[in-house]
Picture 1 (cartoon, rainbow over the protein chains, first blue to last red):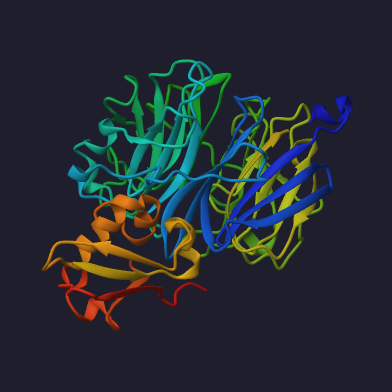
Picture 2 (cartoon, rainbow over the protein chains, first blue to last red):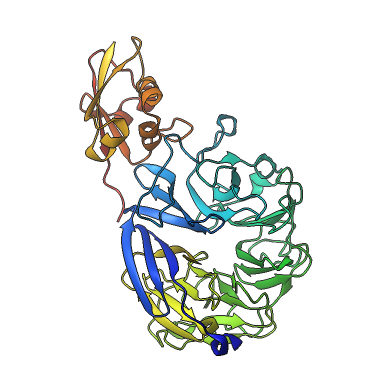
Length: 369
Length: 94
């Protein structure tokens, strides 16, 4: 990577780590981190966001208590204090008969809508906030979709786990759910169209259906908003036409199974994933902890392992437990179900441990503060 | 009629710090109607006890005069004047 030659002063980064039993916040850079938490102990934090569109970044955390249900906690002072609204911030309208299980994803809207935040939730639905992520309304266009009755839960539940608002055109929103697949709106969420052509659903009688795929994660670079990358339940794909059609980019990976998919913040051709052996063998190949990076939009892949465990890594990285920050010399991060968190510098060429012995890591986001 | 709702420590901040809340409801009210009355005063408490369909949260127990409501009529359990409803989180999680 060319970044190493131009490395400047390290920027301070906030790394938010959502786990099975609370939120941890790491502050630092490179190999030097200070970790606080658990914040919101004994809640599972499937989704976290750091909204950098305001002067002080706002942290949004999806906190779900086994006892007391789901909520959204907001901090405007980098985690020193938190607030939650009196009324449920994300709630299904009475006519739906549905109840929120948990929020799986936050997605700040386009730069032209600084108070818009989307939430993807379980059961599969999309919500929209116009007050910076404090309270949300159901996006009816997806909920009323005639396909909805045939979306079914995967192993982890049935949720909209990926939400990608177009960076400059607020009417364009792309979501992905398991199972169901990718859906695209070009009218601000009033209607959605299934966009899964080329994505395989090997577990269905028709392996290339219109919808029903188990897409695990989709990602997009803001400079190339018509190109998408997907890590599927077996299958790694790229779309060059706004998610309309997808082509495999799995050649060169040790396996096409995995969960995360991350695009480098400054290099639209650079993507990261964490392969696992297979659906029925959810471990990294040979128990070796390796991130895979492509610098050519998926044509070729490179294993990254310097500083990572060379063996005995019998764990996995979940779909939102990998992220990148927005620093000039961007860092890449991931956390495991075994509670280890690593930071990668120089595009992931070198890794160091941020934290260990945390609860299962479920979600991560990072930003310069 | 008046009934008493007893809250665990973790929920008391959602009800102004009270350990016990007196709730006035019509005669022949159900547990659900007691919780509706409670919700009107303390919405932040309500959403910890029930989801948006008014279903009781799975791991929250409601003892009506010492008997867990799910052995009675659940949210439809009839409540008598002077009843004591104790909210206790169940053993859950790992």
